[in-house]
Amino acid sequence: MSWLLLPVLLALMMVTSGCIVQPIVAGEQGALPLPPSTEPIIVIAPIAAASGDTVSVGGAGWLAGDTVYVNLEGNQDGVPVGAALAVTTVDAEGRFMASFKVPL
Image (cartoon, rainbow, N blue to C red; front, side, top):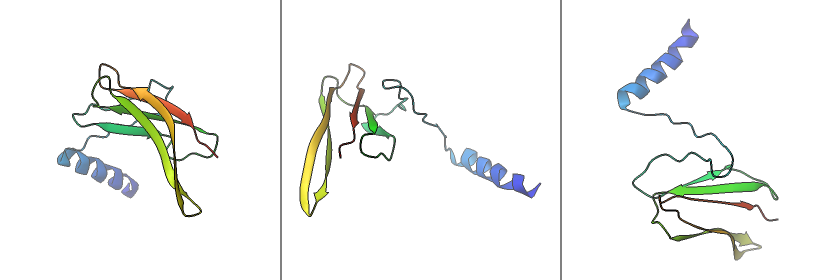
């Protein structure tokens, strides 16, 4: 019975503090669920990827018609490097979706 106490306390704490849990489940490109927002947001799935894996990037709350560039930046042997991996346009609802393969 004591194992049940922790989940009950956690649920009670979330309800009394006003927290809302909204799981985001990975889906097909274009089906990535984005929570409603008044501020621009960006979501990335998966959160970790190896070379050659496909990564999806989506956003909401952007200005319709804007161009979004997805860039990868880092350091190679102490030298800053970067590359534009995807370019997309924000739709009429202020959302965008792009995907790219992680380079070597």
